[in-house]
Structures are given as C-alpha cells and as structure tokens.
Amino acid sequence: MSFLGNLIWFLLGGFVPAILWFVVGVLWSVTIIGIPVGIQCFKMASLQLFPFGKDLSYDRMGAGSLLINLLWIFLGGLELAAVNVLAGLALCLTIVGIPFGLQSFKMAKLSLMPFGARIIRV
Image (cartoon, rainbow, N blue to C red; front, side, top):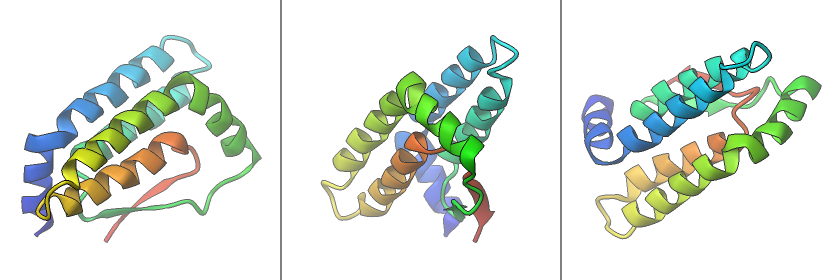
C-alpha cells in the first residue's frame, strides 16, 4: 500500500516541495558552516518525495538542535512549512486526498523543526 501511496504522492504533490528542499539545501551548502544543514535538507527532500511507510521521531532534540532549528525557521523553514500547509489544505478538500493532506501536514511540522528529527521506517 505504501508503494501506491508514494507513487500517487510523487505524481500529485511531492515533487515540487522536494525540489524546494533540494534548492534550500544547495543554498545552505554554499558555506562550510552550512554543509550539515544542507545535508539534512537533502535527507528531508528524499522523505518529501516518498513519505508513506515512514514516520518521524523527535527524540534527539538537544541544545544544538534547538539553536539550529530557531535559525532554520527564519532562513528557510517558514517558506517550506507554508508550501506544505497550503498543499495539505488543498489535498484535504476531497475524501480521497485526506491521507495525502495528512502527509503534507507531517512534512509541514518537519519543515519547522528538521534538526533532531529521525526518519523511521514503519
């Protein structure tokens, strides 16, 4: 079931936000200090492409993750979260789109706090 969900997600809504994650990751990777942030953006871009069958765990939130998340919110997070929230609202307009909208809302939360998050296969 997750293969079919991922295929439909990729075709109907996951590609554009994944490209945005990739672009933000490239921008962060321009500086040496931003490379760890860019690497995390690339991981989240792959999750944005295929989110079904995966879940998120926020059990590794430390002081460093908190500081980077606060900086991240203003330098890329709000825009990515807004794109995912708008896509989630549009997808939830139909009954068939509700599971896809919920995935989009999960990605919106991740867009605000990507550091300290861990991807778990379910």
